[in-house]
Length: 219
Image (cartoon, rainbow, N blue to C red):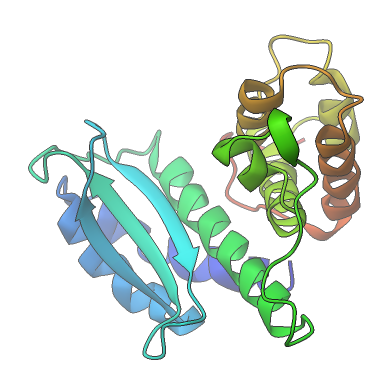
């Protein structure tokens, strides 16, 4: 995406500060200053999950701030310790979430004013809330961008196209976004949602880049 380098570099300026605390609310305070550069704010919420979750949303109805990152957990006292081993993954999750929501904002802003929502490939009796959400045209586009970034983050030593190809035959290859679609739609890759997701992921791969990967070295 056009902001990938700027977002990643800016987030990593806060790396050392994040390593000094195990409090997620402190992490939110540190990162709030950083993400405001790109129009985001951060909210800390209660949720049923026992471990901290990172997610985001774009809400065009909000006038003061329409882009949000959310850190949520059942117990706000649950520690969130970042180390040299996992800090890159945490920042990558934030990076991916920010780019995902920026894509949604672009989709909204450049759509015909009379079309408030994009259509879904899933309708009728075969549909449920999760399938309708993941089968939405806008969501597939943004999720495909997530998948392209995940391929580059988790497998920097492999050609991205090879990772994508091997996902369907090699159980050792894991792409989190694709895993979510597998849980929702199974492994019927002839499904129109799968076909569109794979196509869009292929299209995004040349335009994504991740400098701070899950590995310390690149080949």
